Length: 423
Ligand code: HAM
Image 1 (cartoon, rainbow, N blue to C red):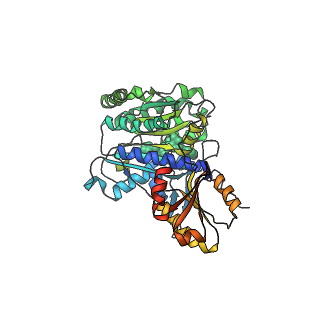
Image 2: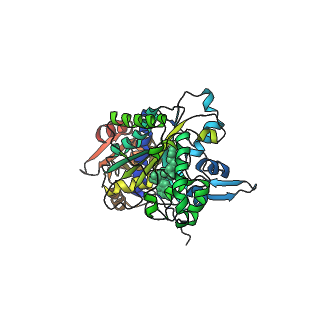
Image 3: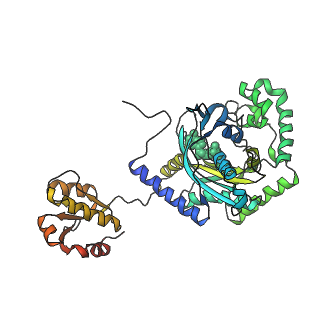
């Protein structure tokens, strides 16, 4: 038997219904925030991710699905959504004719060759937003408010928002010097990857999974001590705006995030649900004022986040969140014989197009088994179509709960159901 690839999963049944419900909620929320729906390709030129996400990040060095296409081009399955959206922003020249800022949202599969475990997949779904063209700290705060509000709408209680700042390019350069100075005497005590990171991008040492508990890490300089005035001001404003929206947060000076493009604000939203395990970061994001330029676009600031749909689903499960999911059907249509199938199919189509969830007997069951099937499907009304019904146009419809039976002219059937099917 062929099995699914490691780190992937199938969606069906109740889980599928819950996912669709959340996606609908996201769609509604994005409409209210006035974000524009984007969909970019699942594979892109490898170069985009190498330059966008960062050559020294774990994602690029260890986790990308790279392949050569049949034209010998280097391609990569997207490991995240930001780089593709930035590419699209530049390629479609949105800095020219679009209303500023451009506010994009997306939801789709991402691919990372990670060690699969609870909350960590090789194919996973992210919902995310990206805002282009506002340097204002107001945009950072608004972006942070989106996942917080989504989680509130879903009824999730145990959430924690952690924020930090990396500062602007000048502050980051000062910080980099401080890191080099600090790690230089200790470099032999760190892992091989960290030695490489020390030479190429010392900031990446801070999110090393091997050395994370090494005491040397604890004493490392903090970004917050190397901020210039403009960066301090930006961070203070973000906090002030979060306060004015009543969003609680904690400043975590160790938070640096695992992607290279961030400047200024970085943040994560964590599920603090008992038993959730180590993969409890539901959502991560921040500001990236140099990425558009790095990918050959004009200088444009950006800020965004992405939320892992699988981790969100797990958090909702741990908190026993109920979903308003419909598991009933309105009508079950039974053709009594071969002769009534066409009429029944047409009637079922009519009912569906008028908004009623309708099933039909696809399996030539006898009447008794059809009623059993109607019960299994939690049917509200059973409609029986025999020779007589077709001839007279008078439909026999049975309330499957009260067992009361009605005879109704076909033209009045929709009105009857409108009155009797409650949502
Ligand atoms: P990220 O922190 O790499 O950021 O991923 C965001 C979220 O995706 C994580 O918090 C987690 O919930 C989920 N996630 C990541 N990897 C996996 C995995 N292997 N399995 C399941 N879930 C996973 C980004 O991707 C940035 N593009 C976010 C961003 C947007 N920054 C600015 N704009």
